[in-house]
Structure formats: structure tokens, C-alpha cells
Image (cartoon, rainbow, N blue to C red; front, side, top):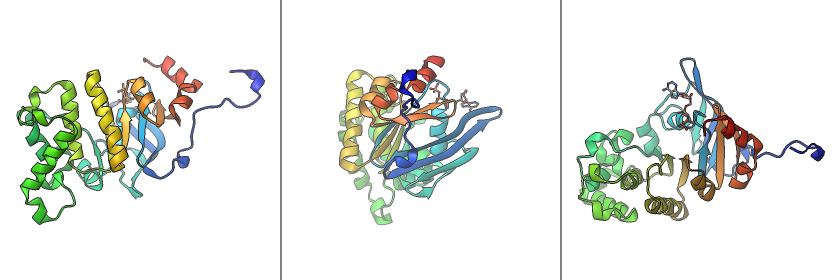
Length: 276
Ligand SMILES: Nc1ncnc2c1ncn2[C@@H]1O[C@H](COP(=O)(O)OP(=O)(O)OP(=O)(O)O)[C@@H](O)[C@H]1O
């Protein structure tokens, strides 16, 4: 840093209050496992319709933050608000009914079912209650009874992700990348407003990676969906996310666009000091 500037070093920090139209707000989130404080007062917001990246060195607290938002872990402290309503500690199926979902790996028992069956069932581990109701939340009972509607919607979703040719294949036979597309198709069937993606591109080949990213951008553009993405691939984050939140040691170190983040000395220091 130049001493001659005479001013405070410019950083990428953006006050979360400055996020226009926040859909998700995380305020002072804390999660402790015994003596380990995994998340230590994380505060940030995700703008409606944005593709926001959550990054940080190994052990920064990204996955734990994710799990606290999506009802996998109960936070030790702090508050999570979605669409203006507090959702702190609510279970995944309640969140899914409100429009906040995350992708899940295809469970072992679903591997023996076909791709179409997987999509028609939707993630009942996520939504719970009636599988059919989970597929199309908010529909009237008489409509829910119409399995054909669910089937049509399932085919449309498979077509959108270009895995309709795999409809009758067992999910267990898919490649890693095809599984990721199926996981996305399953959450899309719940008609979400916001999707949280934890490492959606891990083990995905470049062709399918491009396809998945294209679909994410299309869903934002055409349906106004909001995405929060945890991803270790920096190129993916920098090239696709308009807003990036950097976590370090359980709290938010900096946030801003790719240019601001890559020129923030504290971010570079955090990564150099970490194991990345
Ligand atoms: N269930 C748990 N029990 C005890 N400690 C945990 C648990 N889950 C996470 N931790 C600890 O909390 C800290 C944050 O972990 P977390 O997995 O959230 O970080 P991360 O940023 O997602 O890391 P990575 O990029 O390596 O996945 C780490 O020190 C981790 O060892």
C-alpha cells in the first residue's frame, strides 16, 4: 500500500444495506460446534434476481452458513430473513414451501429410480409432506390430483435441462455432470424464488458446466430467480456473479463485484494465509 495516498486503503467492502431489493438477509449469523465457532457474526444480503457468489478460503464457514440458511443446522445466534419474513432455523420443507430451496445430492435410494421418476417425486427430503404437493406447491387439491400435470411439468423441466433423452435411465447411471443437472431439475420442480447451490460444478465437465451456467442465467433472466452460489472455481465466480461475498474465519471480510474483490488486499491476504 502506498503511504503517499494519505487515505484509507480502498477495499471492496460494500455495506449490505446498500443491496437494492434484498431477498435474503443474513444478520449476525453465528454457529458454534462445541468449542469451534464456524460462523461468527456473518452479515450480508442477496439482491432479488441476482447471482451472488459466496467464496472464502477452506474453513471460512461457507458451508455452515449455507446449512444455517437452509435449515440443515440451527444457528446458535443471529437472524435470517427471506422476502421480508424471519426464517431463522425453519426446516427445509417449510423454506421450500416459501420458495427458498437448495440442491441436494441424489440420495442412494433414488438412484434406482428413473430420471423422470426422480423429477416427478421432487425432493421430498426437502419439501416433506406429500410428494405430489411438494412438486407443485400452492396448487389446489383438485389440480394436485392430476398426475398428468405433474408429468407434463416434469418433461418440460427435463427438456429445459436437456436431459429428457435420459428420462427412463436410472439416476444411478448418470455421469457426475448429468446428476448435477438432475439435481437442478428437481429443485426447479418446487417452483422456487431462490436457489442456493453448494459447489454445483464440482466434477462437471466443461460442456455440461457451460450448459448449467447458461440455464442459471436463463432462469434469472426469464423467471427472475435469485441464486446464491458457493463454488471453489474462481473463474466461474468472477465471470458469472455480479456480486461476491468473501468469508474469512466465520464472518464477511469483503463484498463487491469481481473487479473490487480481486483488487482487495485483505481478500488476497486471506487466501494466501489459507490453504488455497
Ligand atoms: N459439524 C461440525 N462439527 C465441528 N466443526 C465443524 C462442523 N462443520 C464445520 N466445522 C468447522 O467449522 C469451520 C467452518 O467449516 P465450513 O465447512 O463451514 O467451511 P467452508 O468455508 O465451507 O470450508 P470448505 O471450503 O473447506 O468447504 C471449520 O473449522 C470446520 O472444521
